[in-house]
Length: 252
Image (tube, rainbow, N blue to C red; front, side, top):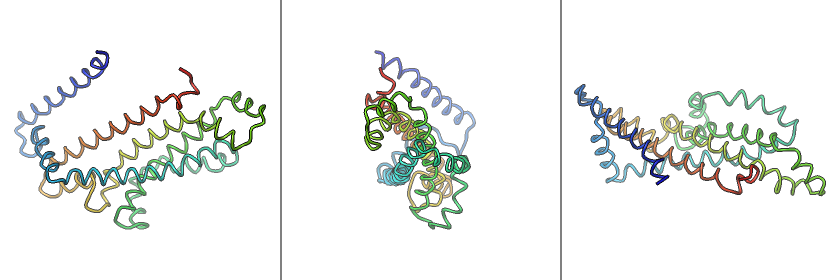
């Protein structure tokens, strides 16, 4: 019953928005903008011939690869910056300069360096994801309570053990938050990233549907699918935040 109370309000708002969308399209007698039924029909058309699953798979592959590479670089680098003051003082200003630059601004350089193909959108997604994780991880290390570190030092633990059993568990909540933010940003730029990709991906589907016959039903379908997948990815990251092994620092 409690879950039903949480689900009903957003479903009611969603139903109202779809009804409003349908009424506006019918009332204005638009010949271009689709009704919800036309969007569903177009989506089923793509799903039946397998095209939709190919586009979804291509987008998830690029985002997963770019995000995974960003995590491999950002988390160790953020831990190092958080523990070594010299590294933080040296590198933080550089990352703070690069972080506000939109990934879209990197498109010309991505094409110049990597050409037109999978590597370019993966690079753009990497750029979108790496800086939030670096900043959040380093910030998390700085917020570790000194009593944890002093207690470990009193027991004479080695630096390796200190990192493995104290610092990493303590900073894990901040790392997960950084990953959640980075994944959201990475999925956000998938459309722009796939403007320079080969003939696949949800971003490509949106652009191609607009350019090849004004298929706005498929344009809207692509946008909705991106939003739904983004919601699912965020829900997965929220589940990770709730794990006891992640939240031990804050208790229950």
